Amino acid sequence: CPLDRVLALGFGQAPEPGSNQNFFLRARDGYTQPVSGARLAEAGGHLAFADAARGGAEDPPQWEPIDRRQLDPGPFYLVWSQPHQNQLHRYPWPYQLATIEIAPFESEYPHTIPSGSAVDSPAREGFGIFRAECIACHAINGEGGAVGPDLNVPRSIVEYRPALQIKAFIREPQSFRYTSMPPHPHLSEAQLDALLAYFRAMKELKRDPGSADVRVERVK
Image (cartoon, rainbow, N blue to C red; front, side):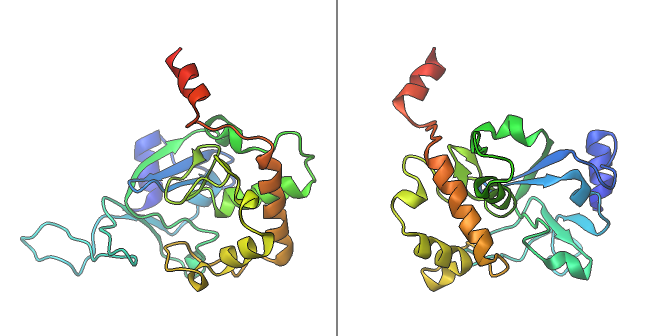
């Protein structure tokens, strides 16, 4: 199903090229990818609902299991057909896709923002990298994806892992353990340093949704 037609049917119209709308792609496994309307407006996106080679004429559509966990990627898999769109760090390819929403990033994930850090600071640069590369799987202060662990509460990743180890793991996680986390060889040393600056800034801005205080506040 062409993505632009799905978005037009779902929201009344597809995003325009250059759109600054923020979309959330939510998968059943907790993966939640924020993505710009401008990206989704590009030609080449499709929502796949089965493998064409699986099943017969009288059989229901089926999927070939994917990932090291051999998962069923249904109900939908966002795929891109243009050659340059296979860059996973630029184009989202979520499987088990269940929901597409439009919402401002700041209203959904306000406690991921390094408030108090200057616009041109390393922490702000690192926030942009985290938003683009990490938040689909990892949360900060309980806000973000749920595939991987929260990286700020109850303890920040920089409070129990040395900087060099964190950077090495981000760049090539498979060298540490078998995991579904993708490698990030495209991130420069300076970008990794900015990401660590973001983690250090957020260490001082903790808000733990699992704490007793927050639970009491919600009850009230």
